[in-house]
Structure formats: structure tokens, C-alpha cells
Image (tube, rainbow, N blue to C red; front, side, top):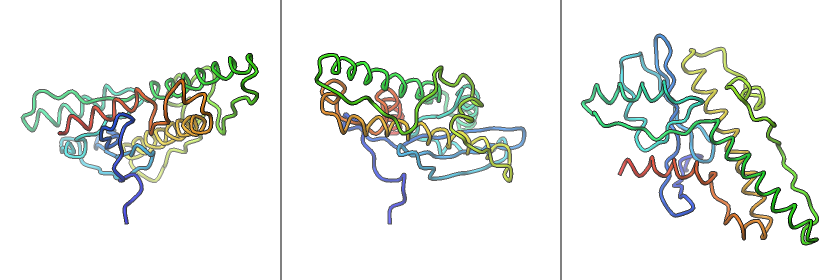
Amino acid sequence: MTQPGLLPARSADGRTMIGHVVVCRTAGEVAVAHLGVDGVTTGEWVAPVGESLLEHCAGRALLAWDTAEAVAVVREWALAEGLTEVNPVTVTLPEVVAEVAGARDAYAAVVAEQQASRLESGDLRWPVTLPDPLPATLEDLRRRARIVVPSDVSEAVAQARLICGLGEWVVRRWQENADVLDRREHLRAVFGEPSLLAPLWEERVAEAAAGRE
């Protein structure tokens, strides 16, 4: 039986998408986790600082709140293996939250125009609304998403699980966007068919997968 999160995924333009990798380093160890395009965590690895987990990063977009530290770790691993040209494709949580929110605003503008012309009567209703203003810090987003940081694991693992949990939360918000597109033909006429991830987000994940080929 195929595990959730491991199904082959395709972007809206037909390219392969593998998913995301989360890399979190603390004083003594590094934790790496995989997050599928469906928001499901599919793997987790831990190693002492200095031991490479680079093999688990191939073909995946690096997901973080701020990717600077994670990129530095991946480059250190790559240099240790003799690879000098390493430029991971990155996805930040602030970017994707903003993209999901921007899409919702754009949908609402089209619906308002339709209502003004009496071509649409129903307002958009979201199962989970996004805050305005959007979360400015990782802690703000954690509180909004109601993610509980585990206390029975190491700091690196806890950080990785937090990022994966927040990534899943944003994926679910995009899936709500996709459901709205699926139900409203006039929105699909403007924005296209629903995609697995928001367009720019999906572009990054597909780009990462292409780099593995």
C-alpha cells in the first residue's frame, strides 16, 4: 500500500514534484524531515553535527521560516562531499502564507465584481481564515496555527516537527483555496484550474525536483 505523501505529484504544467525538506541544526545535532506536497510528513532523520544527511535533501525544496541557516547546513554537507556549486531551492513560510492570502484577496475581488453586476450572490466563506495582518514571526504563525511544540524530543527534532506542522497548516489553507476554485466556474475562468500548491510555491517545488534529474 502506498503511504500518504509518497504518491507521484505533478505541477499544473505537468512537471514532477517531490516535496519539501526541513533542516534544523542545534548545538549538538541536525534533524531532517520530509514534507510532501499534500502536507504529510513522510520521514525524519537525526545525526550529530558534522555527519551529513545530504542524501535526504535531493530534489526537495528547502522549507523554513528563514532559510539562511538551513542553506548553510546543506552547503557545508555538500562541500564536505566535494560539491562546490550547491544552491538549494528554498521556500519560506512567510512567502507561502502571503501567496495563499493574496489569492484569497484576488478571489474576493472577482466575487465582488460579480456581485456588483448581479452575476454572483454568495460571499466567499473560509473554513479557516487568515489573520490580517499576516503573522510577522514564527511564533505568531505557531500560535495562529495552534501547533504544540513537542517537549519529549531533542530541540532539533522539535524544530523540524514545528516547521513541518506549520507547512502542513499552510498546505491545508491552500487546499481550501483550491476547493473554492473547484466550486466556482467564474473563478476558474480567471485563475485557472486548482493546483496542488499555490502557483509560485508549486514552481519552486517543481524546480527543486528538476534539479535532481
